[in-house]
Image 1 (cartoon, rainbow, N blue to C red):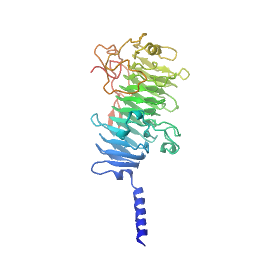
Image 2: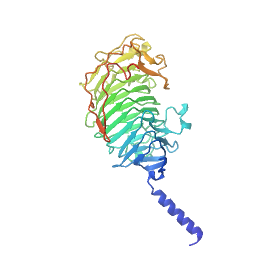
Image 3: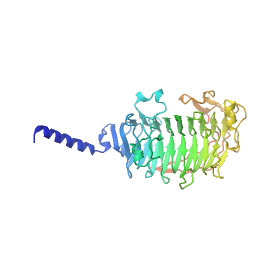
Length: 417
């Protein structure tokens, strides 16, 4: 065989072998850093950087553990989708969160509403998904006919859909999202089509270009949603629906959440704080609504379950237009022991550091803001504590128990410092 032919032969052999490698075969065994595409599982080591060059899939029956301080860097040309058919455990810490992001050069004001990569899409075969001290940002790209999610029938499985930061779809599965931040997304932060679910102690901000909720829960979900701060979601902070007619009926207990400036960037009649519809069963206690568009709003053509309970929620509007939209009516739900005034400026919550005249259409979040309450706030000692949560005993995920937090005697996600 001539030398040139030998060279071509061995080059082709090399390419063939490299094409058979698992994605993790490009991970440095010492640092844990890697360039990744294709199937993934195992452990991504503490403090490592994983560069995602194409769509990745955790196969059914496999698990991926992401340790503290890992940076998952998405290629903005490939716009990868992060598909989970097995289990995913992203376990950061306050000091060293796990971060799903893009190269810093793309984290600009022009890209503040993301769409630079897909999202985390958990198929119905995913039985456990944990996000603890995780940052997800700059995602929400739009699907095409070539998208892996479309080809595999995941999420809405059609071209032209803006992907959420997180989709979960196993009605028998377990999902816990806690101590995490979701920001800079084009569309929904979360879209949950079923499961045993806890959302607790999270922050959502600068999300939604033309639509999008922070927490969007459908039929099949039994969920506790507590101590979340939601700022300037384009549409609702919480969308609670039994749409889809999956079993079990959607049953959500939402308590001690703080919602600020939500709903104003999508000025339609649908909602802007908490939206309930389609026989969803809801209990809503101790929630703070500050300059949100509307109070808790129902779809009058698709009513919530008659067992639903609304109590001890707190409303503040900096102008009369906002206050007027809080007033109970056919579609704005009146709760028991609510704190709601009739004039602009009534019931100032006395946040430690937040300008209550901040324009409601401003999506930019200032991390220096502090939504704790000053001593003397009327929201202190107004909360309801004697109600049950779905997961007071906790959910077991990957051998650890995650409990829904106890309700507080104050209203909102934060008490005094």
